[in-house]
Image (cartoon, helix red, strand yellow):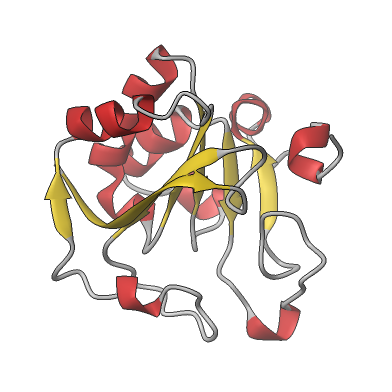
Length: 170
């Protein structure tokens, strides 16, 4: 069961192509300049089963990718890991934003490591107002990284995503 702030079925800003963006409720980071401060409180939101979310995602045949956003998805890591497995079984690319760094997640809880293990792409790091840039693809500040998760896990270090889709080269 996930606690959600909302779902956007036709997002074009949360990753390449048409994607479904799933916004979780609750975030401990409280970044200055956050675009979703209404998701900070852990109370509120709408509870939804992962299988119901899968049905919602699959109802849009144009959305081939799914992005977890927030709030902080890694605060609900167990449920998002379950959803990611369901999505990947249906051939969907799964990405997640997080205020944590890849390195912090490698040393995080088992549930956080499990979620990390089923992602394709991770956009990591807190939003930092002093590093803000409107020129970046799929991230808000220069300190944030777009990472290839399978390669990063294989090498045990953060490896940038180099596919043209994520670099804004189609």
